[in-house]
Amino acid sequence: MCGIAGVFRFDGDASEDTSVVEAMLARMQRRGPDDHGLRSEGPLTLGHRRLAILDLSAAGHQPMESSCGRFVVSFNGEIYNFAELRDEIGLRQADLRSATDTEILLHAWARWGVGALDRMVGQWAFALYDRTARRLWLARDRFGEKPLFLCRSRAALAFASSLQALVQAPWSSRRIDRAAMVEYLTLRYVVAPRTVVKGCEKLAPGHYLTATPRGVEVRRWYMPRFRRSGRSVAGRKRADLTEEFGSLLGQAARRCLVSDVPTGLLLSDGIDSHGIQAALALEQREVATFTYAMAPDGGAARRSGTPLSPRAPSWEILVTPEQRLAAMGRAFSSLSEPLGDGAALATWLLIDGAREKATVFLCGHGGDEILGGYRLSQDRFRLAALHRCSWLPRAILQPLIESKMFGGEKAAHRLRLLRRASPAQVPAAARYLIQHPLRIEDVCVLLGSAELPEPYLGTVDRFYDECAADAADLDRIQEVMIRTFLSENILSFADSTAMDSSAELRMPFLDRDLVEFVFGLAPTERVSPWPGRANTKQVLRRWARPHVPPDVVGRRKRGFPYGHIRELLDRGDGLVRERLLGSATVRAAVPGLSSWLARPSDFFRGPREKTVWSLLALSHWSEASGIHGCD
Image (cartoon, rainbow, N blue to C red; front, side, top):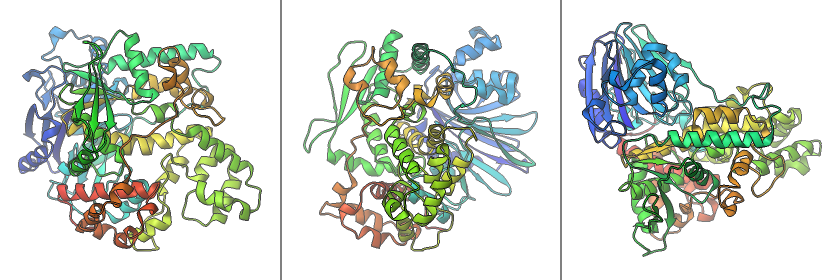
């Protein structure tokens, strides 16, 4: 796990960019404390910060040149199946200069070019330069586990692993994008290719970019898609599907253990992380586990625990309210990009507390989005029932329309959308999101205008429109969830919080082969059509019953216990309001903030509470990043 940065000049002269890339690398020191490198040639200045995970020797230094001399790469991530690719290419370890996955990437690119991306299992963002063609390639993994930010000018393209590093480019505006603030307030994150900073972009997950003297081209190489027609598992017995799922989960967990440094597992009370633990046990692999727990005021020390066995100790990271409050500034300031999820603070505290004992951590992120978790059984049932009752008079349905369907239109228009929708299209008509958006009325108050600079929930409409014509309702819900909440929120803060402790997070549920298997499952193998306490992630629960404690298998989804914003709003010192209103950047971007915050603390529930988290994150992050004002 590392940090990459660089500048590509379209006119072919990179001689003035060394200091710019050095400044970018300086902002990413915690992403790579073990080594750094810088190379400038022709149109490219390329930098790297290294967190040594595989081959801890100097042989892993980057930027790394291919043995043929044609390619040079700066790589951030891990290719879990690099040994398999090495064998497929026909290489022996004796043929190589290092034991790194980076060197295998260079060989794979020389052999297959962009086709190597499909063959790679893991997480990555990299910059690879072809000296012969004078072409730069930037690529990002399937779901966006590793970040990559871009800033273009007429003369150059700058790129970096964090937005804080990217804004060191002299042509960055360092100002908040007012149009992007509509989405940031509504969703609590900004969806690629945009960012919250004017003129700065994200390379979208599953995309690659090529830059030449003629300009830049971006293409998609991967699309998360459930297969309704010709499902690969059609007609197979449920027991066989369950067995194959377990085998693939075991393979995914085993792959994520590839490391030359200590490895652990972030263990929650849910079925996803316990499933990983059980899969590793079946593979006869045990790792230390780390669990986050909230302690009362004056409670126990932050690091405590008793090893259960010499091979697999279990640690409980206890966190007091004072520690959460004290850590907020650093945790939010360290985000690769701002986002509003209090779970980011809890994850930062957990990894910070566990870092002394491990460098690589497995976790259950992605299980809910890929397998169909959260409250999807209840929500699908409610939406289907609302659709069946849509013939009733609007006066009867209006309260349900207002609470279950989102959009800027009046209730009558939303009802017409619902009545015209097929059963599979109901989630699109409702603009369903697992994390409810902030209502348009609140967004308008915060931005101080009844006219928004861009359509409300426009990105959500576009993503639902891009679903396959034959997709089931659950397929559509999960594809949009993967492309929004998973990629832009969970994976963003997972990378940030780990890298700020110079650690690496790995997610077995996002393994290529496991995901492709699940994408072929019928909706009923993922989520029951009936509401219930544990009617989600059906294939995982069936596999887990013989391997995971029954109370975990039957447990409903519970959120990360990171506390409520209302507790902070009720503090006599006015900490939250003072922090937000004292930020000139936030006040400029959100001119209606003062009147919105004047409400009593009980007003801030659900999406409103999450939006306060997002504004706190923005205030800390913009101050630490040198962002000033709004366009």
